[in-house]
Image (cartoon, rainbow, N blue to C red):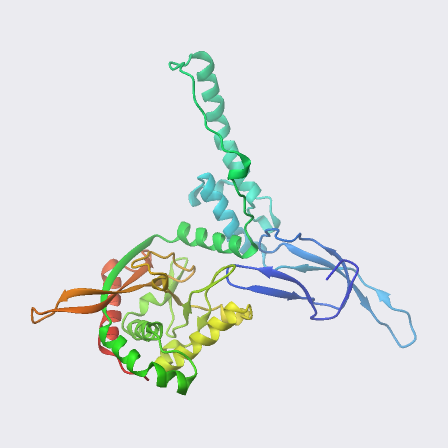
Length: 389
């Protein structure tokens, strides 16, 4: 909508991009759009207003329309107490870049709405820390001549050799969320090797009939998703999040599946994956992936995840260490399938199809031995549960 346009109740006004999805913001009232308070691709803080709307109300029959005070459309409801404790991903990214730790955030003077710390507040604090050392360095340099007087050779690149690419709204949102996760959660990673030769044999024998009957492909990803869901029943702490000093364990499995799109990476969520077999999981993956690549994901498709999985093996990468999708406490990475000669239990050698699976977890929530148990459970289910359900 343009400034001056009339808008109806719930009519889409503008689009907001996050690391998860692009969402249309509807008008909360009917009236006239007086002013848009955010420019395209502008980065906003939680709670910042987005637009001003002049509300027109109609009186009794025959009377002229009356004008009521303009309404400000907020980006999200919030309270002062919430804002004082909340650091947006953009603020955390700025703090990380400037070397300001979380323990220092309480010393920063907040100028944002509701006592909220803004990026400018962090920058001002960092500058105030750097200023004395800069002055001291300048004083020392003035009093003491340089010991090295050799000429310095500098090499400059021409402008034609440099390309500057402006980050898209989605790319910036993804960056903010990754910084927030990596900055807050101490990451640890474990890797296990799995023999998936039996599963690949089943897939090879049934792929044509499965496709004809179900309308979707039977892939290793569906088996991995089922194995993760089963292993989480044995190691539920993996399927949790941390809220201050409380670990919130979910008894349902909402598994996020990373999908590569032109703008970046989206993570649609398979809800209640623990109740599904390979067939239903395959159908859900196909449906969500299609919606992601066509830009038709709804907010409900990318929210309420409890754990995520990314298959970098599709690109030929054997082992990877993904970043946790905050506020989840774990993410599983699936590597490429590789054929190798291995020694079996009877000391016979054979060619087997092997795959690495990595578990990156929040070390505040669980210990390494617990993570090892979970990965061993995933291995057990993948190597033994080869049936199609």
